[in-house]
Length: 259
Ligand SMILES: [Fe+2]
Ligand SMILES: [Fe+2]
Image 1 (cartoon, rainbow, N blue to C red):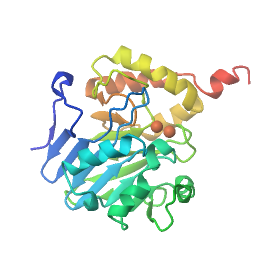
Image 2 (image 1 turned 45 degrees about the vertical axis):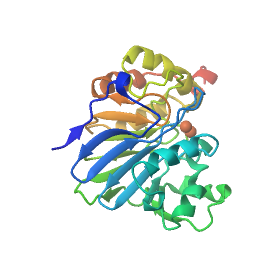
Image 3 (image 1 turned 90 degrees about the vertical axis):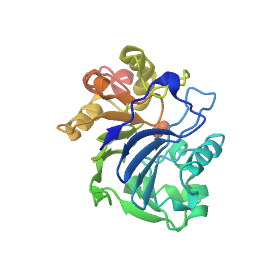
Image 4 (image 1 turned 90 degrees about the horizontal axis):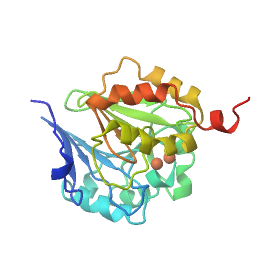
């Protein structure tokens, strides 16, 4: 039986990995950190058969030791087979060289614009999967991971990952919120939208970038949005969240309103 784990914030202990989804051969965990910063980062671990995907592994300072501890509670670090990195920022990428020390054969799944920058983190002999070439990868349990472009939200090569089994959208900085209240799952859509505004206004290029992304995900059934910062957006909040984004003015819309 496929099941989305029902999460009640009161019962979540974020000092440990938090299981978000469970079905035969397919499991998803939050393995992020709880730093004392509004920029706390979410990392996710998706296990399917012998494929173990670490999604947006994160930075080095504070974050890495916590992610490692949570991963170790589930799996050997050397068993990580794939890293999905949605863009090139250090809060996603800086720890990749440390993960490669456990398994040099980890496949880094990313776009060419991110790949060209990863050697600057000290990744010299990385094995790569180009998400622009192959827009999906089959999973042993029968589903697939689909890679969907989200240009300029906020990086030129940005993309998101959709898991057809859980129907989760791993959105990286899209729907990210600057949040220090440590709730893993949003339980109030209005406060979540408020927490998201500052990030959207400063980091997303413009409303056209948002509309392009919304076009790219049109028709896809999304059960939850899992961003890299802030709280997870559960099913009942997905449509209001996407509707809110549609007309949001940000970035260049604000800086150059008359152009
Ligand atoms: Fe970013
Ligand atoms: Fe980020």
